Length: 202
Length: 159
Image 1 (tube, each protein chain N blue to C red):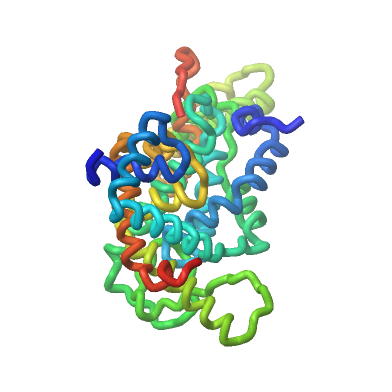
Image 2: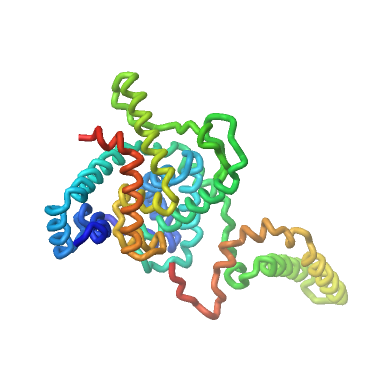
């Protein structure tokens, strides 16, 4: 019988390593995906995801379930991501000359030099199709990254993580109605930004 | 329902999370307003496009790196639970060790004991001044200890 997230976390609190492993297995991928779409590069995303788990682990002794576990988890992740983005913006002067994403979080990068390494699932299309796919994916990613960070977080949490409005509102520290306005504005921006792709979609 | 009101209902409507009343209002508006109808259609297509975003594959070393970071976390010692201040805990544990050592050395408590105790006190003062206790990096890592509530007052912490 599968234990709930809260039960697992209470297990971690009691010192059970296996419970922590189960939470890690369950949320490692969703967290990395969320953070990858929030920040500029994969290395930072993984670094931040580990930081989320580290903080969960550190807080285990005083854990008292008062919200859904996912709300707590994604709140930590969102705050770390927002901090990283703002740090990165403040370090705008540090332009990375080398191609691949460097180590450490918060390092500044010029968007011109940043060539995102896209891990596109290999469906064995031809080279041209793969290049076009990569372009489309890059265009979509750029559009999402161009959103103001709070809108970006709202879209990602809503679109990819199936959280309730009250959860997302709690994570972003706003009312539910404010959240829905935020989402509407964000999707409206994306709709315009991605118009050529949206028009071609069946 | 005008278009502005519609906008605030649209997301919930498309998610299938609108109330029955809201759904009714929205659908009535859609019948009458071609712009909003187009908007709904475009949002649906947009959501399809957004599904194309590839996700980063978590690197194989992720878990190992995390475990290394966790292993580097300071352990909570018994004294850490009794004395929330790490500096004091460190000094106390050293004093304790010294006391044990003295006790082993002078079981009968003879004339030498006085000197030993005086020496121990002096050394304790010295230890208090040791640079290691001023090392803010070390103290900064005692986050876990500083979160321990005082023994007499168990506090209900909310997450």
